[in-house]
Length: 249
Image (cartoon, rainbow, N blue to C red; front, side, top):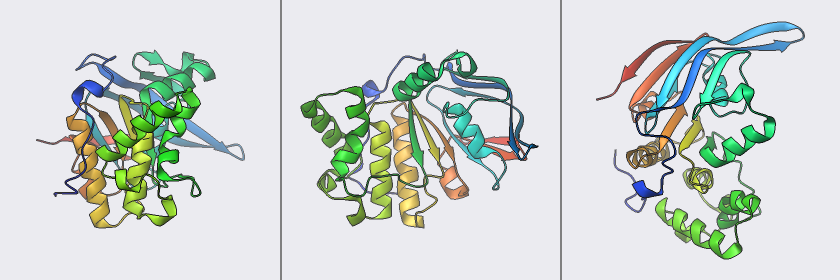
């Protein structure tokens, strides 16, 4: 499905080339995750093994409670496995200190969630530049980088508008721009179209596909099979296990 013709994406040269093409940028080895509530264990993941090579676009689908969001959080270093290994760029996250893990996330991974998590009283440009402020980037460089990125996602004309005055689809594109502002190689998306109508969902899916075409590695969790169809590989997860996968032509 076609989408906003004004939406462009980073050139291939702008994507971090740290991990060689074809190498496993993400690897899970017999990963288990157990949560406890009032002393009662719940197995969210029951021995998942997975390799994601650089430049892949993977969709993870499954019913609520299947473990797909847990999988994404582990891949993003937001949580640690109970057992097994999660390797990000060859780094075993269980062997990294909290500070080193945070550094890895900030440098290599961008996150997009179902809820946009924008600051409503700040204009779009200020929301997108927040990660750059944390890094100590100068105000002039921040402005230049943010405006360029907003142009690439078709929102330069909304730069000085507050999030409350733009549509849900536009807010999600702002959130995607914020996730990309540090130019991470990996983009993780947890139900990115969960709050959007069909038209805006397809627009976000098309934007992800264009980002992937330019070299970005994307892992996306979704309930929406039509959105999932934009990925190159679909993993079907149920009861904490990957049941099967589908490769797209």
